[in-house]
Amino acid sequence: MSNRPPKSQSDSRAEARRRARSGDAPDQSEGSADEQPSKAARPSLLASFFPPAPPLRGMPDPLARFTYRGPLRLMVSGLWLLAKHPFVWGAPALGWAFAQILLLLLVRHPLTFLVSVVQFVLLIGAGWIGWQRPWLFGMVGAMVGLFAYLGLVLVIGTQLAPADQSGWTAIAIGVIAGLGLIQPFIGAVAGFYGGYLRRRMQAPMPVKSSGRRSR
Image (cartoon, rainbow, N blue to C red; front, side):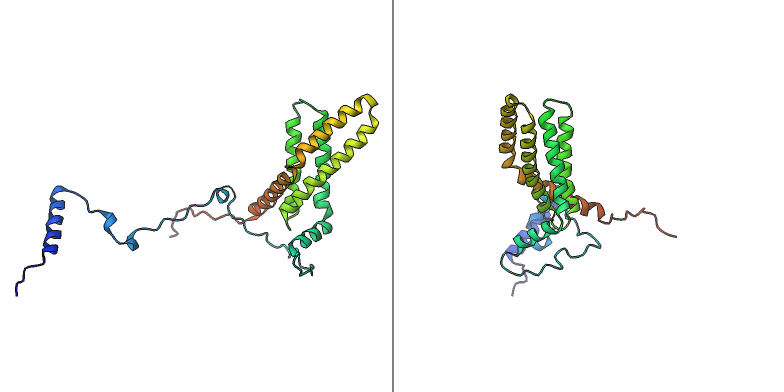
């Protein structure tokens, strides 16, 4: 029986010697798939802007006394929370309405931008205080604020001269028509951000090591 190694083994050894002489590095792609380091999954765009935030510490269950177990539990529980905490969405709604009246009066004024920022901060505050369901309190605060603004416009319009009432009403209706479609979305986003910001600020900060070894 011949002790000569198989031709495939001799060819592979010859190829290895040739690569060693030429200085070529071995191809790492020929290794098994298990030897390849696994790449960590990249976070989504939303997770990049809003990293996961832990729940608030020390807060009770907001639905502890809610006993409804029907098919519309999500909707009914939302209405139950709104009825239980009317100040959370009512105060920002009134503040938003008065700020919108100021925007209507201060046309092309340098303070209009500041008033717009205050409006958005009020809706963020609704989500901050309404930690039970931040996006819902922000959305309802924005919608109720729009209806409160309409009521204030009607009250102010009755105090104006008849010649000015038509122009005042036309401008107000145009603002309501423009905001009516996007106002719930703006309120929900602002409320969500308020609740998220509160959780992030109360989250424990990671302790950084000084790098010094204790002797």
